[in-house]
Image (cartoon, rainbow, N blue to C red; front, side, top):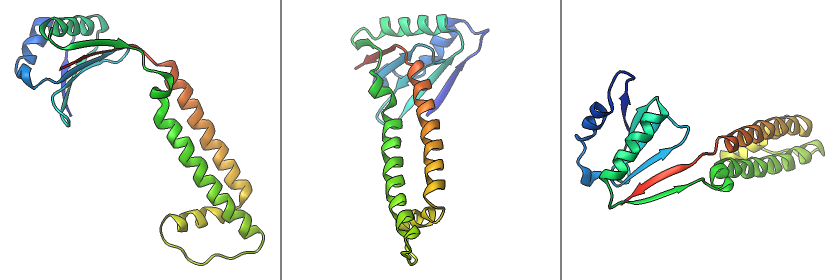
Length: 167
């Protein structure tokens, strides 16, 4: 990912002229999100450029200019759903819970006297964590879960409109 920066003393014209180094037919999409200090230019499946602009008003004017230049592109404006916005954290919670339950099973078995031999891979990690005991596992799980939920709520509060131009 490459980055283009806009300094506060540059004029909009200078910024837009710097974009002319990118052939228009390479641009597959443009993304502008409110509250984020950059406009993302999608140049292909694996290549994107970020145009950093500190001033939100200037950033929106640049996006409006690009919108008028690429009038054949499809324009959409939406606020992403809450689930879409926090999906990675929800997946993390599910994986964390599965590992906690699996490790708790080993911890309960060990407290009842069952001994596990050396294991390789993720099973070895689960057995190693189980040696801490069920109480410490529960404290660790609740701590990590609390941090994850706090970050998820914080991320939901920053949800904002995303304007997109797609070819």
